[in-house]
Amino acid sequence: MTELSNLKILRRRDIELIIGLSRSTIYKMIADGDFPQPIKIGARAVGWRESDVSEWLDSRSQDDIEP
Image (cartoon, rainbow, N blue to C red; front, side, top):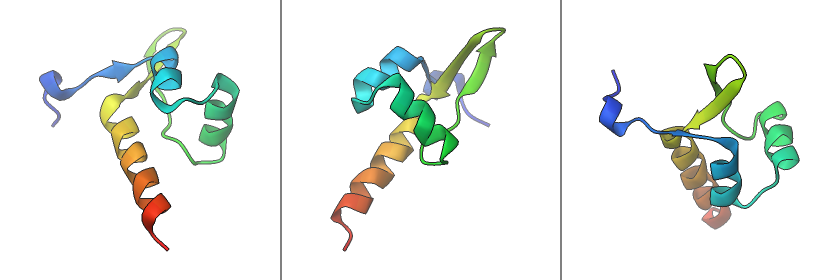
């Protein structure tokens, strides 16, 4: 079980700033299975677990340095 102190939800604008990609690119990557799925946090709101985004970023870094 995840401790609440370690759980942070990022909204789309946060994601755009962190990874430097546009909204449409982020959603295309989600559809292609290349970016973590958002979680529903309200009737009309979604967000991403910070840990999922961090893992994704780490995996991208590893992909860039592997031959």
